[in-house]
Length: 345
Image (tube, rainbow, N blue to C red; front, top):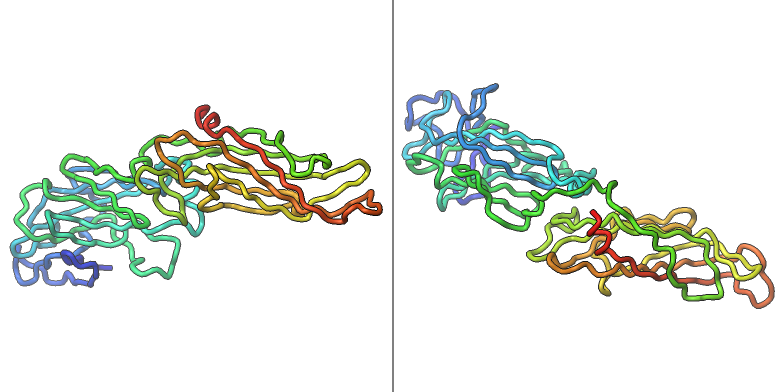
């Protein structure tokens, strides 16, 4: 499907290629038109640059400006830019990809070409998870953009790659990328399954008369620039993601035994509740809690201890006698040294 990207205008229109003749002729492309190169199987020869998004990496090759590409002719007073792209799925930090590539989380990848002060919104390189979203037609991997001006090289050309509200700007002439919130995507990250966890079962209860048979683990600490549903961390901040699981087998006081009937977490970091909880689940009829807690933290500050607070609703199982309540609640608390877990990765 053919597209046109008009300077400084986001709307895309459709153009035809029939009857193109001499450079700058009446049938030449108009400024802002976008077309497939018409040279399948070949790759543009020129300057290369790579952009990483939360789901993978794009390799772009931008050819020097020209008057024609195959049968395509440049507009009067303009040039043609041929751009080829290839996507490498999962070529990004594995801890970011593990969340960003989930079903329903993937966002479109949009491309804009800028020449000096003129902007050409080209379209989407990759679809997002929402099949009904506008602008879901996909650009060809080998395309031509008709731009204004008598360009002789790529010094004034930049590519802008957008993902979930954030745009990364790269310069094909020298392969550089402007710094910004996506910088941490280019760092190395560990596989979440390789990250350490800590036993957190040695804490305190709100009722010392009850003896708990329980388990608790926290860890898999990741500091990420992007989390689906929350978006990009703001400047100077990062998303600190912590896994937490707690399970109560039974609570006992002498001959009286209780089983859990429900559970809730009020876990905090520096007194602040999670910005989002991923994969939260209550299992085993209310005995078990699991979740991945996402906190907004400062990038350069040491991570504070995680204050675990889990409350179970209890139902009498056996040993009831006069004056023994048939239902009660108990809250379990402890602190987990996240800084130590991070330093061991």
